Length: 83
Image 1 (cartoon, rainbow, N blue to C red):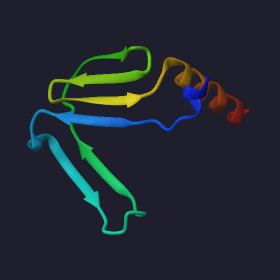
Image 2 (cartoon, rainbow, N blue to C red; image 1 turned 180 degrees about the vertical axis):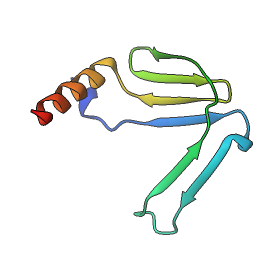
Image 3 (cartoon, one colour; image 1 turned 90 degrees about the vertical axis):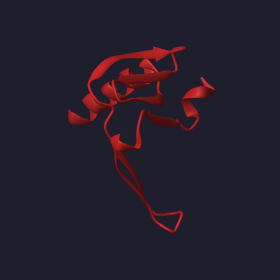
Image 4 (tube, rainbow, N blue to C red; image 1 turned 60 degrees about the vertical axis):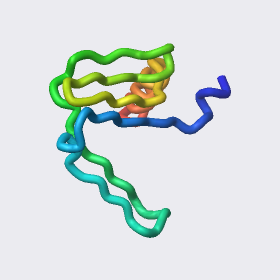
């Protein structure tokens, strides 16, 4: 249960920097950071070890520390907000 309260992580692995569209980092560490690119065509998506969503494209991989339960809880919370 304590895993749910921890911060989540992500990583983006691109096969080439050509697939990277934009990276914006301001000098002030408190400012926003933007990373944009293309994973290419979706090959497949899966949950690794049940705790990391991996989205595989032909140009790269996006990994997010996210469980199926996190998604279900988020969907349920969104439905309750809309009522």
